[in-house]
Image 1: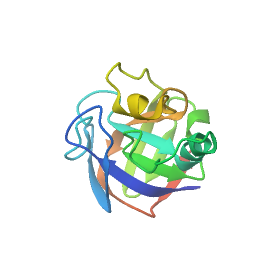
Image 2 (image 1 turned 90 degrees about the vertical axis):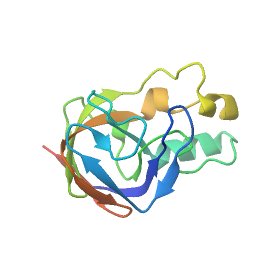
Image 3 (image 1 turned 120 degrees about the horizontal axis):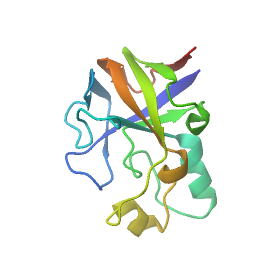
Length: 144
């Protein structure tokens, strides 16, 4: 069982996101008001705080939730080890893992600021199967 430790949103792509206390996640769309939401397979991005801590241990300072443009910062689950197709109950939502990692685009603000990015290896993406609210502190359950 994992936990949501931050919900992050931005109106533009390629920039660090701002943290919010709760988000409305729309079925087959993603986080309401977020630039990455839409009818595609990468509606919601998730990154484990454990991955952010790895970057901090490498001496990279100023890292916090949203710096990697993730919508949900999590704790307690090795997200990148979940197989594609895994279903996750997060808050009131049901989401399905659709992709592990991604290519950072050339204008990635995080890469330019930090010199490297953990999202390509350890970030995951989901699509929203059932919408609802997610709040900081909500549980994340892997549905078998």
